[in-house]
Amino acid sequence: MKIKVESRSENFELQVNVGHKLLHFLQDAGIPVNAACGGAGSCTKCRVKIKEGFVAITAADRKAFSESELAAGWRLSCQAHPRTNLNCLVPDVENLNAKPRVIVSKEQSPCSNPVLVCDLGSTGVVVALANESGRILVETHLLNKQVRFGADVMTRLKVAQDRGVSLLHEKILESLEPCLKEIEKASPELFAKAKQKGLFCSGNSAILSFLHNWDISSLAVYPFQPLHKESFESFSEKLKINLKSLPLLGGFVGADTFAGLYYIESLKVQEPWMLVDIGTNTEIVLANGKGDFYFSSAPAGPAFEGGNIVQGMRAEAGAISHAFYKDSKWELETIGQDKARGICGSGLMDILFEAVNGELLQKDGYLPDGKLMLNEEIYLVADDVREFQLAKSATRTACDLLIDRAGVRPQKIFLAGTFAEHLREESVRGIGLLPEQIPFETIGNSSLKGTLLFAIASSEEQKKYSTELLNKLKPLELALQDDFQDAFVRNLNF
Image (tube, rainbow, N blue to C red; front, side, top):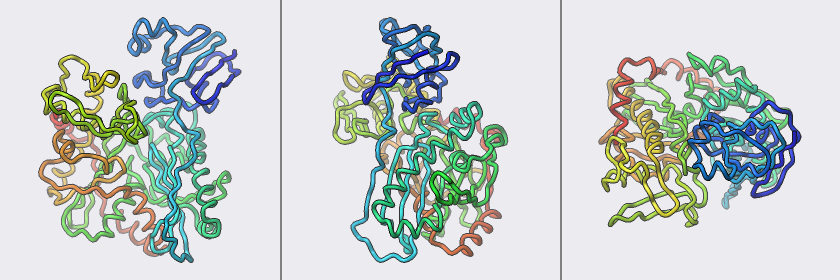
């Protein structure tokens, strides 16, 4: 069976066998279709237009498209099981073939003992070359090529169960390879020195399981534990380098949170504090000031990054990043001052806060008209509001329960991650994302910062900190808490 594919960048012709979803045919051919929900039919982003051939209309298609759109050939590729030759248009191809963004420090200070460090995020990958004092010399950024298999880790774990971990493993390596090549090009001598020590990696438990190609059967189901928790090292034949991951705390709270703790502890904060790393899987740690660390993870889902939002998108040119409602009109700010093409996480938070204040949206999330128009083309629907409520409530509820179980209220909240840096405090407070009356401070990519500090520490210091931390950890499994459901429902309101 032949499938001809037209996209914005180029055309393809695939020779395939009957029996699989169209989405899988496209993904296997390296065509980066946006499938934030991993093919469940809920995000409606894997749209294709069937120009020739026949694909049956499904219930998910009828929910995603109008009758006229269905008649024009629009289908969800994750629901399509082609049985004839097709000619289809893929309009929303993600730019997974883009080169890494490279930042070279203007201050190239002398360096005799360089290190390579990496933060493997669910959405983005950052790889950096730094000197022995912790100054980053070269930094590269690239979209994690796993995003084509789902925006969140649970979706990717399901893909790994169905299609094998090696598929996700290869995509991680494909994300790292161009970043390492760019660093080598920028500083070949220092890269060669640092490569001998390996690449120090942080990331959540699922991403690091994919990195090392671990069996994920114990992580994908209860009690949701990774195969290994201690520091781990494996050699990549593809990259010709040792991949060294930092320790995992447990469950989905991984090395990125370990690195965040390591970074904040370097600041010598004396009073109780809380770390909140907002993302598709939000990790939260509460330090009680007496040496103990209470921690949990909140399955927030991809809403904070524009996922599962009808017109949501990542923080790219054209994404609405901030919004204000004044005099019955919307004022929209977009990334790159481009034409508004969709809504990213920070914009979504602003819109909901302003809509509640402007009485366009009720505090319980009810949208009177079922649709909120921002301009002639961009809008929110009731399902978008609900998606954000679920993400917001998961995060807030985890914070509340950790404070209750620790018996201490933090004096400061450290908000980690690139997403957090772009949030308006007024919106964060207004929608109730965080506990009231606790000051917060954004600290950027604490995962990368902590990984770098750990990498330049001596092996004795690394081992000592890792060993001592194990005795101070107090995990909280949210799903097992009797009061979780009541708190979750209560925190759905804005």
